[in-house]
Every structure is written in structure tokens, then in C-alpha cells.
Length: 104
Image (spheres, rainbow, N blue to C red):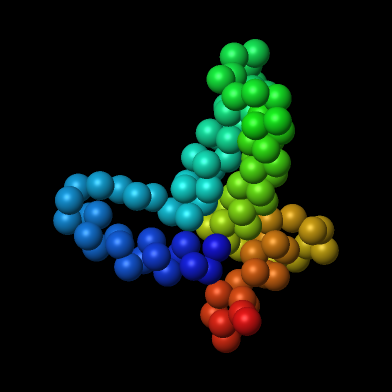
């Protein structure tokens, strides 16, 4: 997430000058999530992958889904006053990692 945010920030000016919208990290992760779900054959009976590769695609779906959840939480509007473990809570856990020192 941290690496993707920095790479997207550095390429945003180039893509804007070409008229391309590369989107936010959440959008990138959502697209990868959707594609891995499609490749796994979970949403339809048609898949060109064999059983083992569909299982790998399903595992990748979990990976992309978790990344999407974190990125989406960081884009959500903050709302205080709740003890629930919701998107605001996820953002409050991850946000210090983005502004603090690099993770080793």
C-alpha cells in the first residue's frame, strides 16, 4: 500500500498530461480483486484455468481483497465517536504507518 501510493503519486503528473486517469490505490486494488475473482471461476462456470490455477486465483482474490479494504478505508471520510472496528478503525491503524518512518 505504501509503495503503491508513492508510485501512483510520482506517475500521476505524467498520466494527467496524457489524459489518463490511473485512479486511486483503492481503484487499482479493486480492479485486481475483480479480475482474480473472475479468473477463479467463482462468479461464473466459465474459466479457462485448470482447478489448481483457479485455486491460486481464489487465494489471490483474498490478497487483493485485503489490500482493497485497507486502501478504501484510507479514502473514507473519518467519523469519530464509535468503538466499532469499522473502516474508520482500520484507517486509524494504517494512517500512522503512512506518515511515520518507513517499515523495515
